[in-house]
Length: 330
Image (cartoon, rainbow, N blue to C red; front, side, top):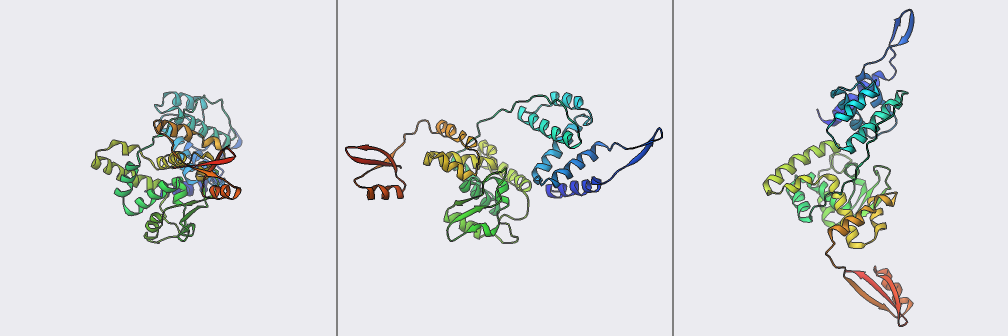
């Protein structure tokens, strides 16, 4: 059963529980019976669906709660959950996500707890060589190859790419519109290569979505299988570290290296908060620490000359001997 069917089954069962009330008599008094843990998780999943949470969020939260139960936690007892968390051999980031999930679960059931503190630890993303990215693009299946090329050229998230519709592709202007952004990002239009447009237009049009109806989890499983095969074939274990999100990190880093314009990178990625974009400055500096910036330099003798230079991408530097100096990165 694929992930889409699994989620559908979860929500179908959860919906049945949404309005169910089981009554039993204890010492002459009627009270609602406590549902089993599975029922509580299903109720929570249906609540998330009604709150318009994404399918990926619902799957993740459900999986994490079931993981606690599988490892012996009693979701009715926060202290039991704390004990299981302390023994789990997962990262601090994973534990922090589990704590957030269980906190939401308790809040839905009108309960609370004093959560343990697990501090998120930011890691420097892996940035592959362009040749490694291209080897994956050329070695994967036709539709997956087109998807990877889209990620490479636009830096969009995999979920955003999965939602792309044929109406979002403008072959005349070589642009792609991200009309359904994830994680509160801004919608945006990204210019792409004529090559990508040709590759996209050659795909079969069996649905309104460019990359078909399968969700990002199914696409991820397919990518993982093909990536393993290519990694072994090319004897390059580094390929195993290239996830869908790696393409976004690579694009942002390369785009900042090319333009040195962090606002441009922010707009490309759709970030609402530039703090989320600033990390790529340090990444670019670390990767290209030995590179030397080179520029084309022009002198403007008049206001008209200055306007023309600005129109073709030159930036003003300074005045010298009554003239204005402009430069543009090579």
